[in-house]
Image 1 (cartoon, helix red, strand yellow):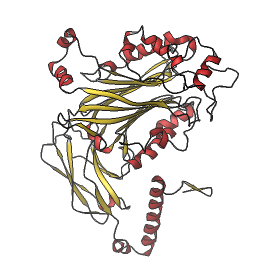
Image 2: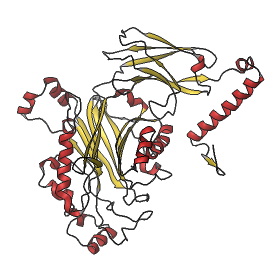
Image 3: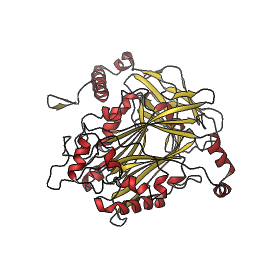
Image 4: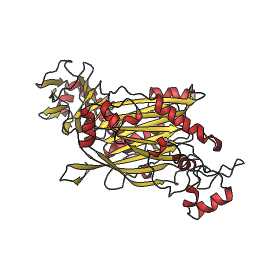
Length: 482
């Protein structure tokens, strides 16, 4: 677990958050995104939030992506899963995509996940512009992430502001204590916000950028200018713009636009955050006493460690922007909703038994299920097999479940059991890691030589597929796909 003890005296811990925003310009993803995710940094990240704009959304491609994961999600899952990160949820509106990954250890304490979207293109009827958001409770703290793509062009600064306020007004959540975006304890707002650098000519812009004198451009940055007169923007914080403007580049280069349009460089891609202001006395009277007490007793401190762009990526005319944060908090929730216990040694030769126990007043469902996951799994749906829970009237006593040996995976390895809550739309509990061993050869021989041959070939296929997934073998060898 990468969360650090920052105050053992008061029980506070710091969790590392890594946020990326990138207008990918309908391009396919690059071969490697490790530097984008900074996977070698220490301490390790606890949460990854990736917001993309202009993901390829042609009608055929969009429908295909709805049926299966898009290419960007596939690459991110393939990169993060071997490091122990699980895709929690995602939301997409045409070219806008927002994805959340967390370390497995934190997943049982991410609850009340909801997502929504708002269109602003073509007077609100088209989703090429707008915002998508995900909200959830993290150890009892209400967080919201909003990924936006606002109106383009220099002269539309006021329209961008109108669109942002429209998105905030229209986005609702089915939560009594956080029905709207700004009700959350912490909000992260990011995306291609499309604010430009006003007034300065091209020569002055490029000279300032080439000499690293970014501060000469700050006072004409439209978002900075709007913050001086828009109260809602004054509640948001942003780190200093000590990196190159991220738009517009010639693709696969670090050279600004050389086309006939010669777009002026701008910091269009931004990451901001807002900590909910302390309520006034009037607001306190309208809120529940417990909610107010929770905010006071369990505060959260946000510190930005880094704010930069990665100019090495060239698939788009935008460069990705990265921000890392420390979220310092005291855990409001520390007890999992369910415990899962494995009985004995698991082998593909015999039925396996485990039991689960509901620890709190947890609203289970007949549609809840318990999956068997091989370590390195990508998401809740990436299970080897599963079993339904007993019913929706589970008492505090343990419930025993048996998995048939015919359903157990033939590939040996380390596994965990995970309890998926349909109401919460997430995995709410995991068992300790345990091993599943291969089916014994004597069991296969009992069915004859043909079965033995098929079994050996099948194991070879599974191991090859697993090697490809873990990056041990290339997917394409001499023109032939594995």
